[in-house]
Length: 84
Image 1 (cartoon, helix red, strand yellow):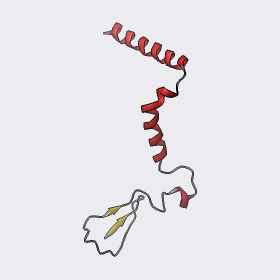
Image 2 (tube, helix red, strand yellow):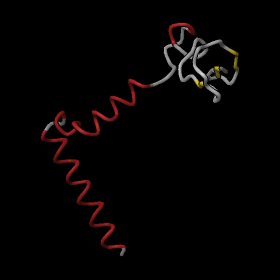
Image 3 (cartoon, helix red, strand yellow):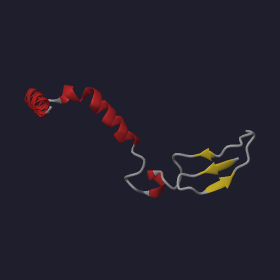
Image 4 (cartoon, one colour):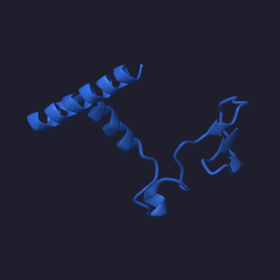
């Protein structure tokens, strides 16, 4: 079986699986922050937070922020309607 690392390098590994297609790793020692010592790397946590904020971000807004967002949306809608 051929194992392909995220940076494109590959190696052969023995296995009991009869796998003909290469096994592509998403996280390996060349990209994981634990081994590279970098704070940045694969931003799975950022993607999760983006989805959470997209769904529940309005719950965290103050009434003033909600009013400002509603006013901005109404202005954008009015400008689109005026240009059409």
